[in-house]
Image 1 (tube, rainbow, N blue to C red):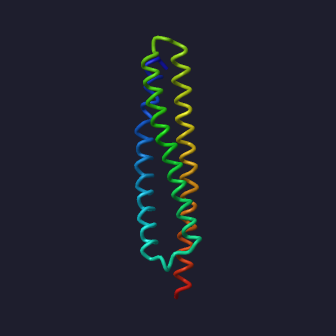
Image 2 (cartoon, rainbow, N blue to C red):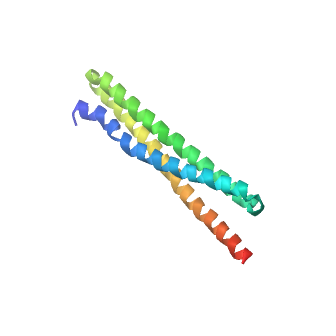
Length: 135
């Protein structure tokens, strides 16, 4: 790959990261709505449900931190690659290293979002148990 391709590579990862941020933010907003629903129906909220919602909120925060970090790292990698393109090997090493760090951040965020998705199932199970108890 030529030097221009190397410093442009991290910038090509930005749209995918942005889509993950968009979907994660939307899911986080739905959690916000769920918390308000639980507040409005306080009599039906269990301690377990509150703990699960708080854990989901932490997962979303952590995932978003990693995703925003990856965007920043990819942008910095592109800038450094563009500025240092005439430095040859050093430019390549810096750009590739930062790109790898950005990819690690996306991977960490994806793992957190997988954990959050599993937690959603626990919340749904808790809701359905409570519905069955009321019948």
